[in-house]
Image (cartoon, rainbow, N blue to C red; front, top):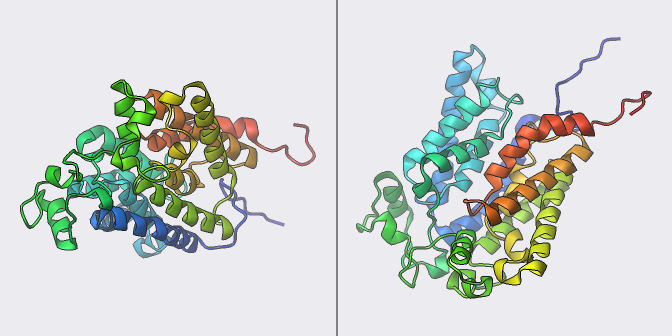
Length: 350
């Protein structure tokens, strides 16, 4: 009797790849809608740019490799990469940011390694890190959340600002990033990090308008929306619980310990869990089956490592949010994690 052995990861699901990818995209809808509500049309435009470019680059690469373009594109994996990358980009980042990031994600990170299922790194996160290092100013300047915005943009103004750097009424990107108090807005994580380095306590820093609410303006609801989408993926058994639970538990534990040791220098547990890319990264990025660990024990170690790295980079590193770097570093550790966490073969000793 002949058996066919598939390459890792060995997923015990019967759902076709194209449907799994579609479910992932559908699960991002709550987060994308909240992102649109608080930050305007920009991220929808960035997602559209990234999806179109990812699909085009995938088609070109597949054609050059002599494979059938239609059947390869139909797995929807390139579109998922575009969605995930577009979500990460600042709303008014110049158009070439999304285009260059998509080219790198598909053309270099995915296709150079052999295509679907062969990439060492998560393509969207590798592209995000490359963009962050190459264009640090454009990649770290977000719009203020809608309740704090001095002015809001319609779809036409947003497209004009992304393509040409000015809205239809002549406002520059820098002017659009001003909040109601006339100061340029940064993300809550960045605001807290900068204020702590200036000698403010966490309590003093978090008296600013951007921190109003349970954790912060806008980003709180964004994380809750991606949490809802992540729970949907768990319910549909698209992903397993090990990685997101390990990430969230590790990050919560470390931030709680830090709060006990230095309450004036820590944002606290809720702040870390509901700021930045925490829920998006835990459920949609780290759970990539190709670049993550394969065994259940390995997934717990993989997730805990990401949670540890996120906390260390957020509190000690130079970047306010850390998920992209943490995921890529953990991706490098997957072969070692898999080696020491692989289950014992039936009939053999461990």
